Image (cartoon, rainbow, N blue to C red; front, top):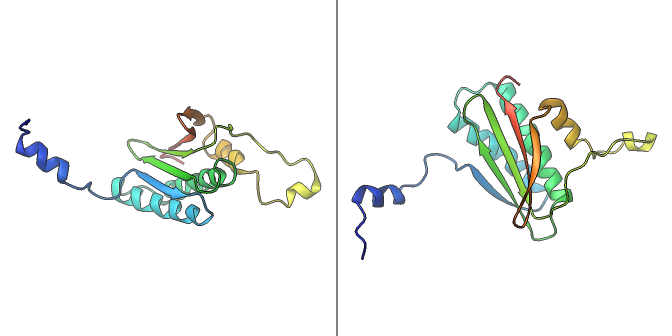
Length: 152
């Protein structure tokens, strides 16, 4: 048997201080609200004093990414993973889903399209975080990431 130092054993049993950086969600519309609440709680705890406009931007971006994952990146029964990092002068958001289909812009081409309530998520990312978002493959799907500067 391997003897581990007591300090290491104690550290392994200690729960994390505050909310973890990862949230696993069901692929359903209600998950968008859960993601927004998670972002606020995470930033309040891990980056106290963050300006309200920055938190609002991170909440909006996360909401758009989770909505896109629910609508276009999952099948019934799949999960959506949200990963946050609020270090330094930016907040990074990753949303993982199980479909490898890459995100694409949906532009309005007709009068009826202006009435739609869809297709604006990536436009919002471009407006709020130009050049600071992208996507990548993971073993069973993809992830979309965005970095929101603290000055936003």
